[in-house]
Image (cartoon, rainbow, N blue to C red; front, side, top):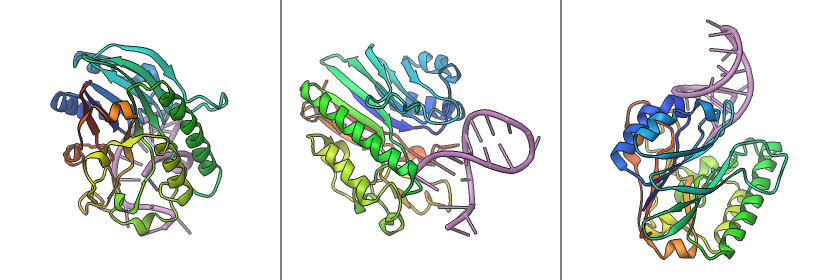
Length: 260
DNA sequence: ATGGCTTCCATCGGAAGA
């Protein structure tokens, strides 16, 4: 079972690029972020024609997440628990029944948090604490759980080409990285770090200032695995070449292969 | 860099992103 996360930066603007990658990479499950569309604006037909079930949690103009799956999706839940006043569409989860096992997949678009300090940074840290609580509850069931998406967190200096440029940024501030570690240290595994300790492994390159051409990237799109998921990890990778294609997102797909 | 792109929404500029 191949599961990928991809921040597509606008599903209407990206549908051709997304369809091309799907036909190429043929993932079984895809967690999408930044639809920038209401549910009715998502070009479901194009995705269903490629063999995917489509579950969305959209929002007008920005945010928005979705799950695509070649296998049935059940028990779909939209919105991160813990704050009934949070209107932002940043969380969706569902159970995928694979050929060998059921997997709980959670797709997230974690708040950017800039400028920091300020209300947007406070919202980010509050959201991360709610994520920690949900991640903890998911572990208690001792199931195969994958929490994946655009975390907007650079975990360590080796996850940025120029770490010094990010020291005052909400993606890399000590409070952000501490909140990330509180989640991982519950017992999750950062899938990419299960397969490589290299630096220079990135998932985002800014559109500005020739960041892609200079490989001035950061690693902020992650898949966290419960112990039961990590036991079944076969491989993991980043489809970096997608960033060099026509009309690309500023993020690229990150994926895992599970024996499930 | 008070933003060098890119998207969306709504008009012909502004918000948001990271």
